[in-house]
Every structure is written in structure tokens, then in C-alpha cells.
Image (tube, rainbow, N blue to C red; front, side):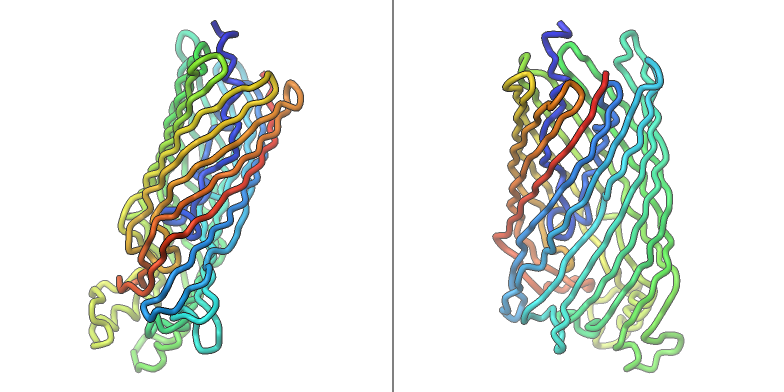
Length: 403
């Protein structure tokens, strides 16, 4: 029976990877934090390249057209895994889990009088070490876990009259590295190419050095506050849960499913000067609607859910094709003007070709229909509207496997 369902070697050929960020999906999600490289049989290694091009346009509340704010971006993902013996496995994974890349240009309320536009760039990198232990009569169960090292860096510029007194505000967050952990469990039944895995990643608390510039602060004589501030900022990247599933339908067809949850409603970026000055504004006529505790620079109202369903078909011993459909809930609407997307629907196609017994190449693409969203500033005032936007993803993978 095991030889009948040799679909486990098909292990989704697709390169249509999880897509996210200010230019794509909920919160700052980018890579989807995939760990399937660790779940492969034997010794396995992969290099994955992903390119994302999104078109995000809209109008501000004055009726001005907002040209495409989504900057194209790309990133790599690496994974290597091997079995120490029949019970224990080890692996190392690299990815860029969270990020944002948006840039306002042209003539809108998000561009100042000098022509400088609102801009945000957030970049993260994660390195995960995993140790797994198999048990059960046929070693069908596995528990795994390990440490995660994560690096984060960010730059934000608020420009234009949409931000009112915050026009000209700039935040630079220097690179910081901190640590979290991962834990999960999986079940496999090779006879029917079945694999299921549930993985939890902890939140990671960063304390980074930052510099803020808030020009309007100097226009008010406020003891203890000036337009420039340098100091620590705390940023906590969110926890997440991933569920991965596959099963053979017949000897040449595989069904797959992925579900991901990220609690973006718990996430916030709260710079000291920006928050402190907003607390002062809350006591003044200009601060109508600002809560006494002040404002976060970035926050989200809802948690993110992401679902992807797919089919993979082996056409020849060396060639397999796959397709999938997907849905991302987004993280609320209205949403921050630094990432005005309300989730997406997607459709993807991919192919995998086994060059030799051990080496394979995969390629694929995904098309995304973004949900319409209203952009808001930190005070929850709606300042823009984004409709009928879309994007695409291209990916390629080289993999090696020896069982």
C-alpha cells in the first residue's frame, strides 16, 4: 500500500506562498512562517524566492487620486532538515515573517508641500532551530520545538495634511534582535500520503533604540517635550498558529489545506514622543477624540485568519502540477493608512519537476483580489478610500531530498 500512494514525494509543488504586508494582507504578515520543510522525510533542504507586486490606489477625502503606494518587494526563505535516527530530527529555518513597504507619491493629502510623501518600511528576519521527536508504533506522531531569533528594523514618515499636526513626524527604529520559541505536533500516515501539523510560535518582545522627530511639538511650550527624542521603544511581534494538512485522494492526486491565525488586535507600535504629545493634545481643542492614554502610531482592530485549499496532481513520475484558492480576512476596516488593505481572495497555480532522484525545481504564481478598505490615521479619523486593487506573486524553489 505504501508504494501505491507515493504522493508523499509530491509534497505540494507550488510556489504560491503566503502573501502579506502593507502591500498585501493583514497586519504586517509576509511569509506565513511556513515550517513544512521540517516536516519532509529524510534529509531535506530548500531555497525559496518570492516576488510580490501589488497595485494599491485610491482617493483621499479631498477627492485627490492616490497613485500606487505599494512598493514591490521580494524575499528568500531557506530550510534544512535531517533525521538523526529513527526518533529524532533537527532542522534550521530562515524567513522574513513580517514587513511593510509603502510610499505615497504625487498630489494628495499624504504628500507635503515640498513633495515628500508618507513612507513606511518595516523588515524582519527570523532564524528558527527545531528538534523533533517521533513516537508511536510506526513513528507516526511527532512533537517538535525550538528557539527563534528575530531581528526587526523600521522607518516611518508621516507627511501631508491628512496627518494634521503630525505632518513631518519621522520615526527610525534601529535593528534589534530578540528571542522567542516555537512548538508543535504532527501526525503522518504514509499509506495515504496523510500529514497534519499544528504549530505555535510565541510573540517576541523587542526593545530597540529609536529616534523621533515631531516638528509641531516645538510650536507649543510643553515642559519635558521637544521635537526630537531618542530612546528605547518596545515592539512585540505577534504570536501565531499554523495548521498544515495534506492527504492523498488517489495514487496521483493530493489535497492540501492551510489555516493561519495571527492576533493583530494585540499588536501596536507606540513611540514615546508620538504617544506623549498625543496625551497633551487630548487636553486641547485640537485633540478632540484622542483618548487620555494617547495614540499608538500603528494598531489593528481585528485578528487575521488565512485559509488556503489546494490540489496537486502528478502527471508523470517527474512532473507535478498544483492549484489553490485562498482567503485572508484582513485585520479590520477602517485600517491604518500605512497599509490600507482589507484581506484578499486568491487563486494560484504551480508546478514541480524532479530533475534527478534527489533534486527538484518548483515555480508558481498567485493572483490576489484585495478587499476594499478605508484608510485611517491613529486618531481613527478616516482620511482615504482604496477600492478595486489587486496584485500578484511569483515564486521559485530549488529543493534537495534524500530518504
